[in-house]
Image 1 (tube, rainbow, N blue to C red):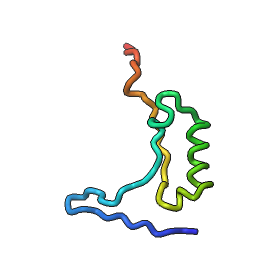
Image 2: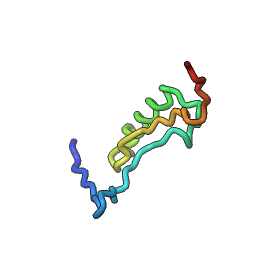
Image 3: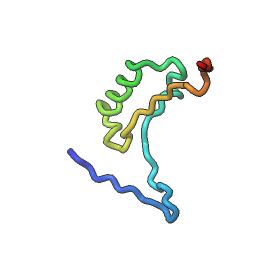
Image 4: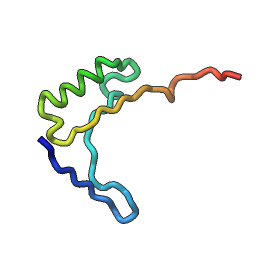
Length: 72
């Protein structure tokens, strides 16, 4: 079943319609796995939460907190 999504854009191009989804950081922090993300996405669909607008699962990979060695 397809549903219509209406996005309201403000006068300066700012999205006024709030997008709903799940962000992994609050649940899994830096220990997030592929299984965690897959299970979360399935849960959103299986329990009908996706029907209420929860349409994405954001994977927070914590890259900005890890030191990456410089390579010359």
